[in-house]
Image 1 (cartoon, rainbow, N blue to C red):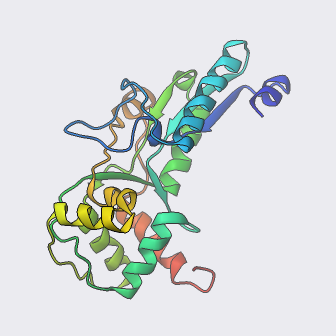
Image 2 (cartoon, rainbow, N blue to C red):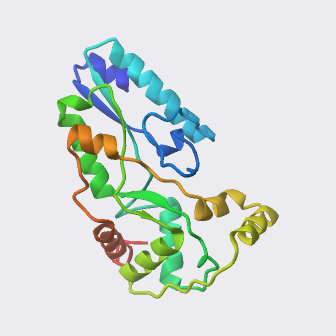
Image 3 (tube, rainbow, N blue to C red):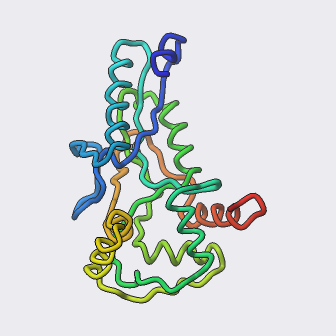
Length: 221
């Protein structure tokens, strides 16, 4: 597609990659564009290979390339893990996640679309890679509470030590799923804010309210 776009005279192509190119989890510091790539599965590896190939095509000119690495994206018509979270929060069962103290970055689809437009139009974006996020980094319990509030449902959380949850994940073969609930994955989006003057136009609460409104509508899931 990139080769065809370049041949057709497209001036700039923005590629949506994934923060998973940086890795699956963060420690004390959030991921930034300067971190060495550390993709952990086939999906992330394929995204990293696509980034490299795209910049290689752009280097032949005259098409410019920009890469965006978003974290989990949510919004209307969301699927995957976030849709599963919406379904769980609507049922409001007791969940053993009250003691989780991780931090995770997310991005609302409306904010991501705005970032894409900025990368298409700002002259300083050419040839660059940027990380993006809403601005709030939330723990798993806080996200469940916010989603529950958007749905008008209570969040019933009780504390269970993380070590016991990880052990349960190993015993049930769901270690990866448990890790996503317990681990941190934070994004430093300072570069796109400083260099392109970008800021998300929507708050996380606005995005969650819009997502919940779609989910509870006749066209939702």
